[in-house]
Picture 1 (tube, one colour):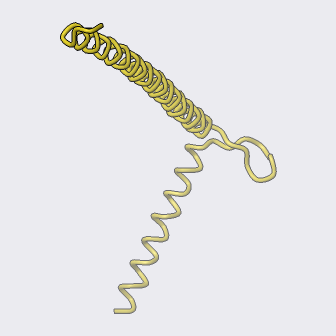
Picture 2: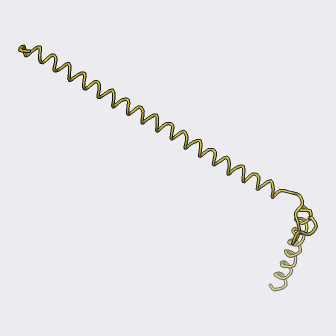
Picture 3: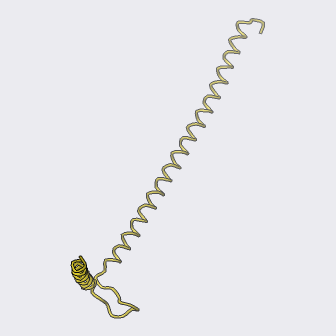
Length: 108
């Protein structure tokens, strides 16, 4: 290759081929990493969603268990009607309020 123009052409062509190959490898690696990131993000989102739904289901089950209409009294005695127990407590609260109002009015 005694012709410098011809030599410059082949050198330029070789440089373009090497740069093209390296850009191709870099782009392939970048797209591969992007695909890995996307897959990991989707997996983490799926796991997050599963965890949230599992906790929500556990809480709903616990709430349903707590809504039973009968409960056991102290030390596993006969079942007690929950609504009746609530009504009795409300009556006691009303009685206590009345007594408290009487006490306050007599001490004034």
